[in-house]
Amino acid sequence: MWDHGYLQRDFTIMCAKDLSRSIDYLEIRTDIDASKLAYYGISWGAHMGGVLLGTEKRLKTGILYVGGLWVYNPPQMAEIEPLNFLPRITMPVLMLNGRYDSVNPYKLSQIPFHELLGTPAKNKKHFVSNTSHFVPREQLIKETLAWLDETLGPVQ
Image (tube, rainbow, N blue to C red; front, side, top):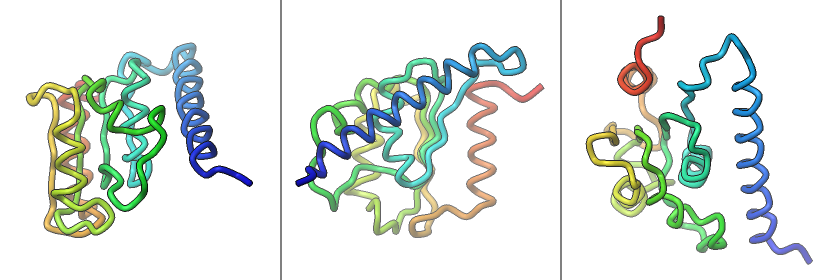
């Protein structure tokens, strides 16, 4: 019988390895400035950012769109539980969420995720829209581009 916990753990480890190998590759490219890499995760990818940003120090900033702590699932194995990685994240992080998100509730999921980040308060931002699981595209683009300009510098 398959144990869901071990499958989830192994999958998360594979994702971390894939991210690391992708950055390895970007570092050898002469047309990429690997000193200015950002992580952008949407929904489940934003949740995964709670682990991946805590393990990959070559990323300079994180943008987590409609993510947070999983409040409806049982706790994960310690080695992949975001609660164990969030305090290790010290890079600048932007979170974009909807206040009425039923997947990642504002008070139960978003706020604790944001507060547990090890990032200094001046280097983290939680943008909240009066929507559900998604932020309107115009706001998403505006906030994301402003964040990237602020944390990585404007595109030349």
